[in-house]
Amino acid sequence: DARVTQTPRHKVTEMGQEVTMRCQPILGHNTVFWYRQTMMQGLELLAYFRNRAPLDDSGMPKDRFSAEMPDATLATLKIQPSEPRDSAVYFCASGTFGTGFGYTFGSGTRLTVV
Amino acid sequence: AQKVTQAQTEISVVEKEDVTLDCVYETRDTTYYLFWYKQPPSGELVFLIRRNSFDEQNEISGRYSWNFQKSTSSFNFTITASQVVDSAVYFCALSEAGISGGYQKVTFGTGTKLQVIP
Image (cartoon, rainbow over all chains, first blue to last red; front, side, top):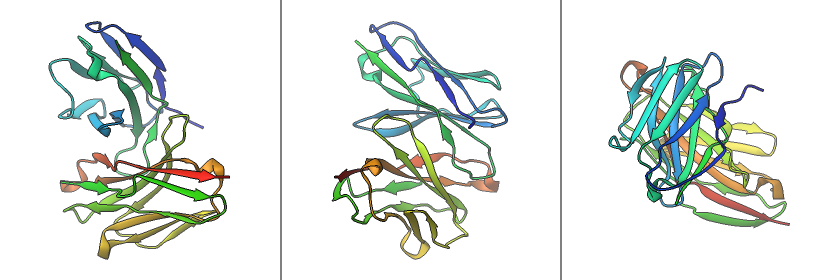
């Protein structure tokens, strides 16, 4: 089965450090989402790309978060500087626009900022 | 704005009981998609089903069935003869097609935690 691959699976970092999370979408998928999951807020959409172009990043704190797709096989989410409140599980999902098929999620990156 | 409500925060059932998870959605679009995802204790999100707004036919897949009713804006999920492996958090989600189908943001409900007791 095709999978969305996220790295790292776990990350512990100190407050103020830069964090980069990576996602390899399924080959051929043209839509990529970044979600953050916390107990308090549930699943929040951070950013959304189609054909590598950012369509919506309104859910992302712009001063410290950035999302990019340098190529079709890689999406990145960076936090700089990280803060304890960024501790969460970050999911990447990919799919094909227009089909309405369920998006496939990666296993997530569990980020802990101490 | 789109919204998904899962009023049941947690449900506990005894194995082999049937259980229904409720999902109510809000959207102004006439074209949209509804989804259910399962998140087992291991943490991954597993796609279960997609339904588009023009297809109100109920669906059955093994022990799982879904009841889509546009009149009440609901998309409920029933597990028949529940098993311990069904213990997970279940999320209902909505994606609007947007103007000319140009935007498909997926909004999730807050999830329902199902515990199946042996």
